[in-house]
Length: 82
Ligand SMILES: [Zn+2]
Image 1 (tube, rainbow, N blue to C red):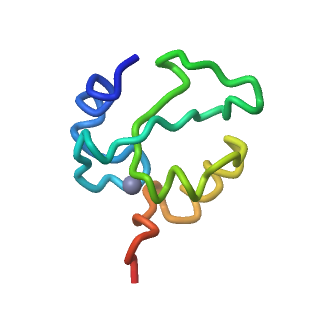
Image 2 (tube, rainbow, N blue to C red):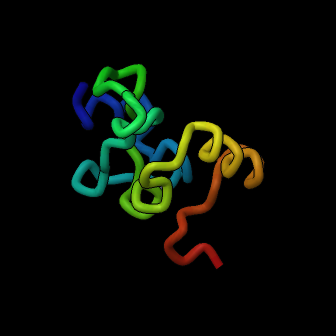
């Protein structure tokens, strides 16, 4: 699992906010957090911007999905969304 491959599969965009994401800014995010037993396998990781990675931290998948649904499918980047 490489960030470059994931970024390509995601169309060069953050998985959650869909903004264009540079490889240098791409962070690996575990959908099921490692603290909850989530693996480093490709089916459990995405690349996203630092802001959302920090926001999600150790949130459960339920909490992340809830946030995405509340924003109608994709959420704005927490940095400067207003
Ligand atoms: Zn993002």
